[in-house]
Image (cartoon, rainbow, N blue to C red; front, top):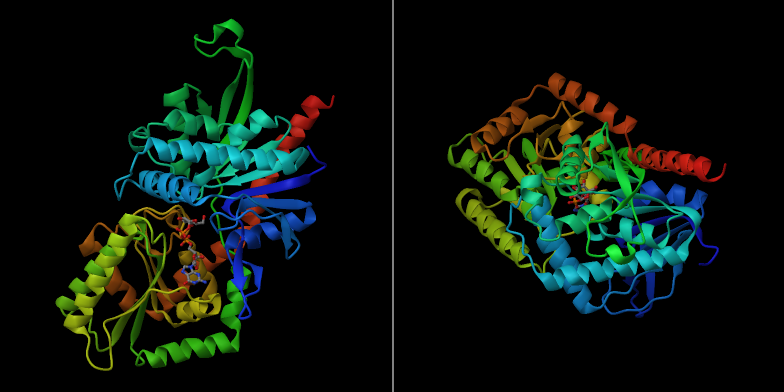
Length: 491
Ligand code: GDG
C-alpha cells in the first residue's frame, strides 16, 4: 500500500471526456456533470483521487491529473463494457430498479463480469487509499465494491450513494444475486438514497434476506467469524459484535448558483428570446428535457399532448412542445426500440397538426451545451417532467434554479424523487393520461401571481439545499463514523 490519498471517489465513469483536436492530438476535458461540481472542492481540500473508467474500451492509461483532480483510470475491455456496463448494469439492474418498466434480462455471464469488474475497482481503490482514508462509492454499477473493499482494507471508512431508486422487495427479490448485492452494500458505513421510500425498501430487503433489523435509519450488522475453520459447510458464525450501517436519504441536488449565474447572463437571455422568435413567437412554449430513456415517460407525455391537440384543447398555432431527447445507451436494444417509437409518434403528431411555418412538436435528438439548456429553460413557460420512475430528476431542479424571474410552471411526476421536495410543482401521475392533460392545461392557464408564488417557494428550497450541502451532509456523516471508530481504536 502506498502513502496514498485521504479521500477517494469511485464511480463507473471518470469525470472527464477525451477531446481530439483538429490536428489529431488527444487530451482530457472535465465533463460538466453535477457530481464533479459537488466534489471538486472536497477533492482539492482533502488530497483526493477519483477512480473510474475513462470511457474508452480497451485502453490502458496511467493515472493523470485534470483541473487539480488526480484520476485513476480502470481499464475495461470491449467485452467487459458489453457485459458489465451495457449488460448487467443497464439491461438488468436499471430496468429492475425502475419498476421493471422494461423487462430486465438475467444472464449469468453478465453477473460474472459484473463481479469481476467490481473486484477490479475495489483492488484499485485499495491500492490508492491512504491508511484510514474515506472512500465514497457511487451508483448501481458498483454495488459490490463496499464489501470487497472492506475485506481488503478494514481500516477505511466507506460510503455508498445510490443515484437511482432502490426497488420494493417484491421486485428486488427477482434478482438471482440479490443476497450478494445486499451483502455488497452492507460493506459500507453509510448507504445513501434519494428518498425515504428507497432507504425503506433497502432496509426491508436487508431484513428479509439477512434477518438484520433496522431502526431509525441504522442497521446493526453482526460481524462474521472471518476464520470458519472446519465449519465451512455450516451456517455463518458471528463473533457476537456488530457494526453500525447508516442507511438513509441524502437527496442529491445541483449547483444552483451556477444555473442562476448562467440565467442572468445577457447573452443567455438574448438566446432565450431568439429561441422564442425562431419558434415563431408562440404564446406558450412547453419543454421536455430528458435522456432518451424509457423511465422518463416521454411516450406518456406525447400521448397526452397528442390528445390535447386532437381534442382542440391546445392550438398548435399558439403552442409548441419542444422535446430535447439526448442520445443514451444506443447499443441496448430496448433503447433502440424506444427511439423508434418516440420518433414515429413525434412524426405522426407533426404530420397531423403542424403547418408550414409552425410545428406542433420541435424534437431534438442532440446534446446541447449547458448555456443552451439554460436558454431553453428561460424560454419555456412550462417544463414537463413525466418520469415513470426516477431517482431524483435534476432537470426539474435546474429549471427552478434558472428561473430568477420567478416565472414558469413545473409539471412534475410524483414518481420522481424531486417530488418529495418540490411540493409546489403541479404534481402528476403520468400513467393517468386524463390527469396529465388537465395539469398541462392548468399550467398553460395559471395566473402570473400563482406562478410566481409557486416558483419562489421552490427556488428557496433548491438554493437552500444545493449540491454542496448534499455532499457536505454525506461527508459529515462519514466523518462522524470515522471519528467514532478513531475513538474506539485509538484509546
Ligand atoms: C441519474 C438518475 C438522478 C440532459 N440532456 C442534456 C444535458 N442533460 C443533463 C441535465 C441533467 C442531467 O443531464 C440528467 O440528470 P437527471 O437527474 O435528469 O437524470 P439521469 O441522467 O437519469 O441521472 C436521476 C441523477 O442520476 C443524479 O443522482 O437525479 O434520477 O436517473 O443535469 O441537464 N446536459 C447538457 N446537454 C444536454 O443535451 N449540457
